[in-house]
Amino acid sequence: MTEQAATDGLARQLIAARRWAGITQEQLAGLSTVSVRAIRDLEQGRVRHPRRETLRLLADAMRLGDVRRAALELAVEGAPADSVMRDAFGAELAPPPEPLRRLVGRSEELRALTRLLATEHERLLTVVGIAGVGKTRLAQEAALLMHTRDRMPVLWVDMGTAVTAPASGTVRSPRAALAGWARSLAVGGPGLDELASVIGDRAALMVLDGHDAVPRLAPQLLELLHGCERLKVLITAREPHRTPGNRLLPLAPLPLPAPEPSADAASPLPGQSLTAGEPAVELMLSYVGHMRPDLLPTDSVVRTVARVCHALDAVPRAMESAASWLLLHSLEELLRIARTRPLDLVDDATLSDMNEEGLGALLAAAVGRLDDTQATLLGDLGALADGWTAEQASAVLAVPAATVAREVHALMLRGLVRRLPATGEGASRFGVLNLVRGLAADRAEAAARQSAALVH
Image (cartoon, rainbow, N blue to C red; front, side, top):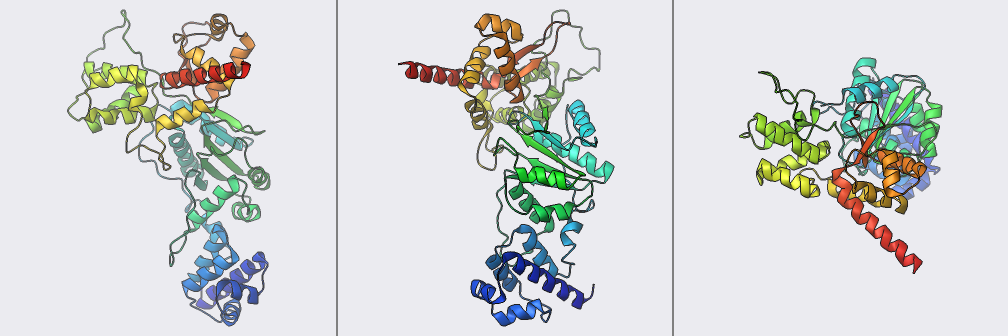
């Protein structure tokens, strides 16, 4: 591109931005402290190398959003202003974040998710589950597969990250600008037409990771889906989004390892691993090995690790945090705490969220969001031995079977109740997560006190 063409691109971009803001050159001068003459020279293409501080003042005065601001800044570098954002969303420039660890034990879930993403008519999907279960990691793997296999550009948006203005004198990257703008759109912000023009008719994937702020999706997001017919949106959330056309994919914790070997269980053959078919144990052993290299994976260690996994519901983040406590406790002490006070192990200084919330606080918040009926039932179900059926719970708790089925279904979508391995062809069996039993009991007690106070 010639220097003159770059200058012309900047002039067109500045004129378009000012007209979008609905102000004259004189008004822009008054708002920005940049002279009318300087603005006129920029818009007429007379200035080949404008100061970046001048453009920042103009962008601030026009209150430009991330996309327009990035296009304006990049136009200074000689990029064609009318195509810079579309180029930024090409397959080569828009990969998902590269996973830092391999995915363990989620092959079936990954297969189901990528199969849906490859289906023409499934365009809005939500992976829902309890905090720490691995929703983000699964979404990363699925997005990476779609990107590498189908050459699909991916717009990855971390919904838990606040938008910050770039430092003075720095160029905002187009990918960061697009992500910031999409984050605003997802919660009802402006700019639908602009993002629709960037995505256009190309096949693309938008991932809204941690979209927990609202119970329903913003209408603007649904309009974007209608306008961009080959766009797919993948959401990760702790609560289900009640939106028509939204396909829910509940993500349970990893399969529970057997807490104790059965009496008739065959002894492993020489060379056979006790972790075979036990992804939770395999994952936990990797955490243990990093924290305590001196703990060799003997049969005794592996069996104790399996019991710890079972006590922590095989929730990946809970297991990772618990392993860090091996700096303080022995493996046997860790097992005792996991069985009696599991929430004491789920937080450490390295695994808190960006907003300083640890897993314990996130689990408490999940239980706290239940209504009184759900909270009371969860507390009662938590007092039952694992392996109850809906019919058994109905009979023991004297609650109508239809009510139990409806509420257990809702609790499973939130990840507070899990399905247990079937025994034969009988009815499905369930259990409340050990991590939330105490929280559920406290919440049910509070609901009972509130109900009693209303009666009196």
